[in-house]
Every structure is written in C-alpha cells, then in structure tokens.
Length: 261
Ligand code: MF3
Ligand code: CO
Image (cartoon, rainbow, N blue to C red; front, side, top):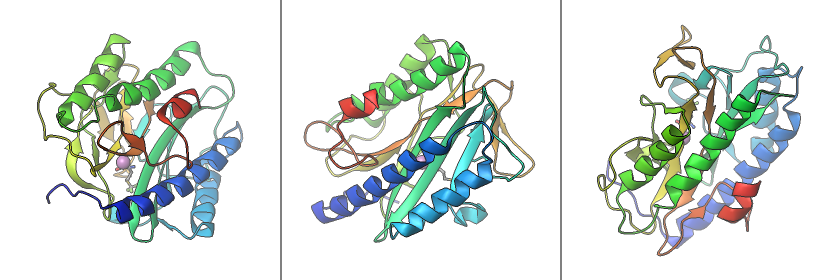
C-alpha cells in the first residue's frame, strides 16, 4: 500500500479522534494505582471510548480480545488485560489505546509508574518519552523517515537502554496500520522522504536491558527476553509544512506542553 497524504478535512477528523483518545488516556492515568486489575483499566477504556462516540480499534483486531493493551514491567507491548493481574507498588505499566472516529484512527501509548518505583525505572520511562520528542524534531518535509528512527535510537542508546527491533511504528489513517513502517533504529538519510499531510504513529519501545524480545503463549504479549523492564510511548502525528503536530493530544496542546505533561 502506498503512503497516503491526508486532506485538510481528513486531518480535522483525525484531530478530533486524537483529542478523544487523549481524554481517554487522561482518565486512565488517574486510575493507575496499586490494587487495580488490568481488566478494570480495559473496561474503563472501552466505556469511555464508546461514550465519546468512537469505536475501540484494538478490539478484535487480528483477534485481539480487548480495547486496551496493558503491559506490565518486562512486558513490552500487547499485554492482554486480566482480572487476575493486579498492579502493585513498584510496577511500571504501559497503556496502549486506539480509537476510530468517523472512520479515522488515532493511536497512542503512555507508560506510568505504579506507586513508588525505582529511580532507574523512572529514568526508563522518561528516556522513552523523550526519545519520541528527539525523533519528531526530524519529522519535517524533505527529511528522510529514518532520520526520525536514528534520532530515537541515538537518544535511547546514549542513555544506556536499547530499542526493540522486532516492532515498529506505522502510518495511520483509515487503517490503524498503513505504510510506511517506522523502525526506532536505522541509519539517517534513508527511508522515504517526508511530505506534508502524512500522518504517522511513532512509538519507541525501549528495554532497560537487551533489545531481544519474545512472544508469550497467548500469542500476543511481547516480553523482553532478559526480563528487564520495558517502556512504550506513542503519539499519532501530522507532518506539516513546518513543525510537526501532535494529533493524539487534547486540542491546543503543543509539543512543549506535552513534554512537560
Ligand atoms: N498500538 C499498537 C500498534 O500500534 C497496538 C495494536 S495491536 C492490537 O500496533 F491488536 F491491540 F490492536
Ligand atoms: Co501504534
């Protein structure tokens, strides 16, 4: 499939989808505390998405059984919510969520501390988030796609962590996963040339230890091979003539606001 360029009208819809998704994330964040089950988070996400007139994009996607991915500690992504999995003090938890609004998609992930976590775990969360913002500095027309990837990799590795190789970001629009694939590692100067109107889901997944991962028996949950903690941060963004825009944030939120958020 070719990379799609969105019209102003399509972008308006994606902005609204992203605003709603950001509202869902904002509400979920308040619930992240020791004692809550990952299933409760999923149920709440599903309810909020529908209340806002959206469809949960993850539910039934390739058979995925929930509206939210909840990945704890060494789980990298695609953790399946369970009422038996109770968050406890010292955990880190990644919440990945997607919505469809008037046939357009938005996709975003955040990683949070549960109660009090180690300094190193907090650094993992912070470096993962910042790596996204290092990457999108290059999300401008004329630059190559892998300029983003290389910047993410450089930032992560210079902080002593590693970038997961087996999973990538993606174009997004009418489909959750459109071309191009967006690795979080690569050589700069390569990859497609970026153009205004491209909408991308950029999503660094960062392990504290080695980058190797494997899949659990449930065929979904991806975990770090060495059992080290892993964090995930993702936004849907728009390439414009000048600075990129975050689409999966509340209306009016700038890049600077989101870095501080
Ligand atoms: N945000 C993820 C992605 O970008 C999650 C989708 S997997 C699903 O690929 F199965 F849960 F939908
Ligand atoms: Co995604």
